[in-house]
Structures are given as C-alpha cells and as structure tokens.
Amino acid sequence: MTTLANESVRITATCVLVDVRDSGTTGVRWAAACAEALGVGLVVHAGPKNDPAHADVAALLAEHPDLTVHVEHSECTPGRWEGGLVVISRARACAAPPLAGRDLRDVVVVGGSPAALACRFGVVTAVLDAVGSEGVLRRATAFCRARGATRLRVLMRPYIDAADSLDAAADRVHAACPDVIVELVREVRSVQEETRLFPSDLLVVSGRERGPAEGLQPAARAALHHAPCPVLFSCS
Image (cartoon, rainbow, N blue to C red; front, side):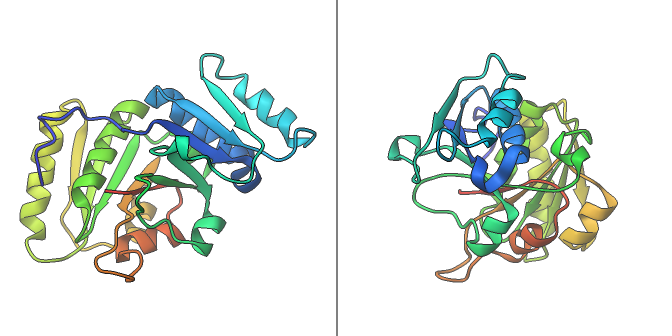
C-alpha cells in the first residue's frame, strides 16, 4: 500500500446522492449529515413534485440550512454527478451488489441501529480483504476525521502476509491521523462477530472483485448481509 501520510486524507466525492424512493427519510437524513461533514452538496432524487414525501424531506433538510441541496425528479442519475458518493438501501444492494464500477462512485448501504445511524459510537471499522485494502483504509481514516470518530478498528481477513499488512496499516493511519486511536484485530474473527462485540457507526469494505465475475469478496458480502450499521463499499 502507498503511504497515506503523504496524501490528503479525505473523501474525494463530488457530492452525496440519495433516492428518497429507495432509502426513505432515513437514508436522506444520513446522506445529509454525511454531505455536511464532507463539505459537499447533496443530490436528492425524488418522485413527482406532488409526492407527499417531499414535505418530510423538506423538514429534514431544514435541519441543515448551510447544506447545498439539489432535488431532481428524473428516473436516472445524470452523468454530471460522476464521482458522487451514492447512498442506497440494503434491499437495493442485495438485489444488485454494489461492485466497484468505472463511474468511480463509492456506495454506502444505509441500515442498522438508530445509534449507528446517528454516529453515536464514535467508531469506524475497516475490514481489509485481499483486494482493495488501500482504498478501504483511506476512506475509513477520512470518515474518522469527517464524522469526528475517535477510534478506527482494523479487521483483516486471513490471507498471506496479513499480519505484516495489519502493522503497516496501523503505521499509515497513525501518520495520517494521529488523533485517532487505532485498534488492530489480530485474532481471526468474522464480520458478524466483530460488529456484535464492537458496535460501529460505519463499516468500510472493498467493492472490488478479486477476479472477473467473482462478485463481492467475502468480507464485503458478509457486511452487506449482516452489518448492523451503514456499510461503505470502496470503489478503489
């Protein structure tokens, strides 16, 4: 992995996108808080202008008066939003797994306990798999900063040189974000067990495939189906 210390530790999203018809007001609330923390605008896809849900969304967005919001009433996402952070429901993600694509969009699957959705734990968990661990670690560190988390837990799936990679990951996070406590999970532990024992506000995994048409890697697949908190799928 290349060093994080020599780079700006930030999310490179151009905006945060959410479809109220898919994610509901829960998704819009999380997306709005995320966009505000990242310092980017929010794009809300909605139904027809006479949809009663607009009143609920408007009331929710009134809690973020400084946030730039763009509401669209179309069925498709315009190309100008390329590079956005896309917020979707777990049902949609299970129907079409959030694999990394050419549009360079990270995806957050919103769901979980009210405490996790409100970022009350102050913890972000990064799960490093065989492919895409650098992008996962970078985004996890950036979200710690943006959302004010105090701890970053790093769980590595077992593969060759995993222990050395875990130590290297800790060094990189300490160098880039010294005010965040890094907790390395050295024992073999499933994603389900980790999130049960140590609740997090956000779980970060890779959306990349190990090989063509292989689908999500084991950690990402487990997170999609079992994580009791929002899950970010890194596109790099």
